[in-house]
Image 1 (tube, helix red, strand yellow):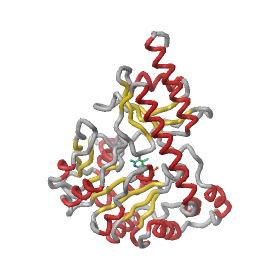
Image 2 (cartoon, protein in one colour):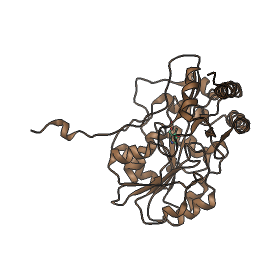
Image 3 (spheres, protein in one colour):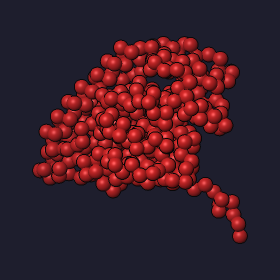
Image 4 (cartoon, helix red, strand yellow):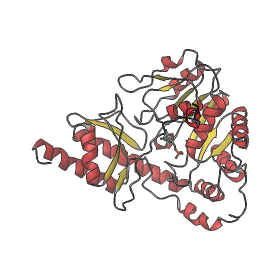
Length: 356
Ligand SMILES: *Cc1c(COP(=O)(O)O)cnc(C)c1O
């Protein structure tokens, strides 16, 4: 007996951070930006019109704005519905070899989901004991490489010298660097796209530009890579970018000083949080992102996660091998982080005296 069920594409979907519908929570579980988008974005809402019509399928106004912002040609920019859309299309476009693509064992947990969905063979390369990527693992022949820089959920930044080394050993495959968190103090590999026509840089408006709800992501690379992406996108869905997000995205790029100010505040709060976490007995790799990946010397991460949740403080906990003693804590406003640290102080003090 045949059933349609035998031919179902079976997938295990990615699970995003919880979005509680209660109002008064401290939400440090999805690496969202605690500050609102630039005032220019809120103002540009008045310019949203023509909703009756299809949007520009080439998203040319936003492509032009992004190209101008980075000093690139428009033909070097591809935009999509959040970087998840850009990344998924990149997997479909560039990872078509019989050889396995490579990415770290501890990384953005969407990569293995897309590889499974598109039936792309993959190998996960173990991070070293300090959670650093071992570049030598990526030397052998493969079907492509992808990793975030800084890596998620560790926050560890790979220096340009090692990225160059990885690229020099991978000239015949596409290397994708997911720079979702690069604005929080990292050095971008963007200048290398002139030298390496197989390097694709993927960015998002969700984290550093406070626009997760708008869904804008983009890729930067050689004209050939971008043409490849546009051809696949045009074979899948002509109108990925809606008219409001084209307008709002362009507005965000015009307010550089607000953007820089927001980043500075988050970086300052992150560095303050690191000191407080050390004082409370946590250890963590040095993060260059808008989150800290921390483990307590005595108290199980799951217990802290659950106790925080009861107090309406949401952080991210991954029940996976090697990282189940860690919490990924998004850097919110200074006030939010002070409340979180107060909670930790109370909680850790009370379990010491057995009262919690
Ligand atoms: C958040 C995140 C993304 C996806 O962001 P979008 O909201 O889809 O733009 C991609 N990669 C990494 C590593 C992320 O953390």
